[in-house]
Image (cartoon, rainbow, N blue to C red; front, side, top):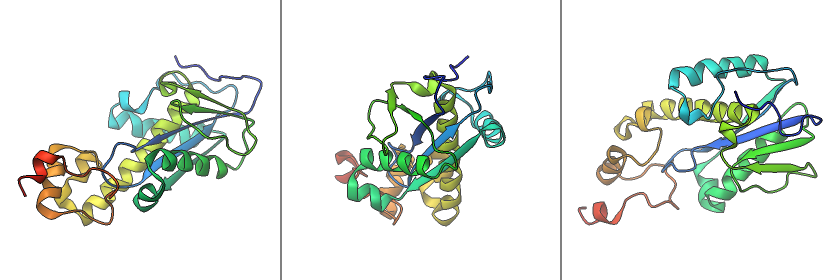
Length: 199
């Protein structure tokens, strides 16, 4: 069972992102605040859950959270400011969009910039330790997957329905054959050297 809060006395928001390691598409972040009494036994890091279970839990989060928000940062912005800064920006945007302002923020990972004057705590593997971060992880992952599945209909040759923009061999071979799209992150190394030499 994950912990409900890092600081029980504060209105606490958990935040996480999805899509940092992808070659294309946005980086997506979510922020979630639960009521103090909320508990759910199935929450975990979204990467540890099946797609079906993530989608089921997304509905639970959207129904049971006090407030939640999801934010997208485009590939163009990622190229402009780098993926770490874009991930933090997405988390800041998600927190800003909450209809209730948190008094404390817990963040998955070890990198964050202060948001306004709200105190925060970074937590390595926080998505497997705290309920609100796990929920943010689930929302960020499911919203991003849904977005990439929609893009797949426009660009089916890259198999984004399956790989969600991650650097699979199929995705990289499609890049070699068809080139990049407006959704690819041009600041990323889209093709490793051994594939470049074959062109």
